[in-house]
Structure formats: C-alpha cells, structure tokens
Amino acid sequence: MNGLAWTSDERQERELCRITCESAAITVFAAPTGNGMRLKIVSERSGASALLDATVLDALCHLTPAAAAELVRVRTEGDDGTVTDQDRP
Image (cartoon, rainbow, N blue to C red; front, side, top):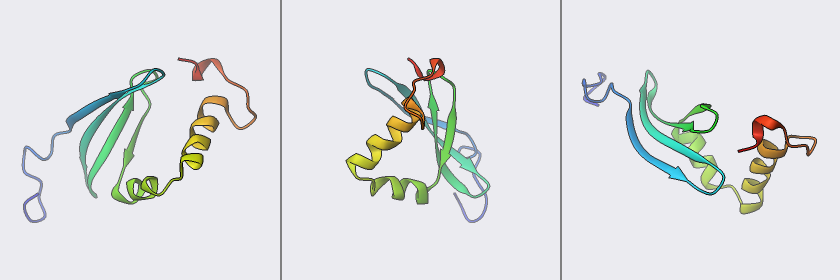
C-alpha cells in the first residue's frame, strides 16, 4: 500500500495457500478491505468463510492446545454434544 491508497495489484484478493488434513480443507487468501489487509479463509466443504484481522490472529496464537480442541469440539459436535449432518464431512 502506498500512502493511503491501494495500488491496483493490492486491490485484488490473492490466493496464498491451501491447507488440508484428513477431515477438512481450506483455502487462504490475502484480502484487502477498507480497514487494511485481512486473511480470508474459506472452507472447501461448506463454502463458509471468515475475514481475520491481526488482532484475531494474535489471539489465536495464544490458544492452548486444550482451548483449540474445545473450539473444534463445539463446531463439530455442537454445544449439546450431538453431531449434525451439516457438520459431517
């Protein structure tokens, strides 16, 4: 970014990488917004996406393994412990 304006190359969303494991796959993009650069992550299974700024990414760096596992458990099992069809791969 030069000064306060995006250059034409910086205005375009760019694919950075694809990350996969046995139960999920996501694509990561660099996404310019009016408030600066964000990481955009997109689930290949559901199409759901999220824009993450540096504050969110910094907070993720401080998750303990147990806290990260709990986030995954709640997403895949739900708050009541049941697995829904939309959560199955």
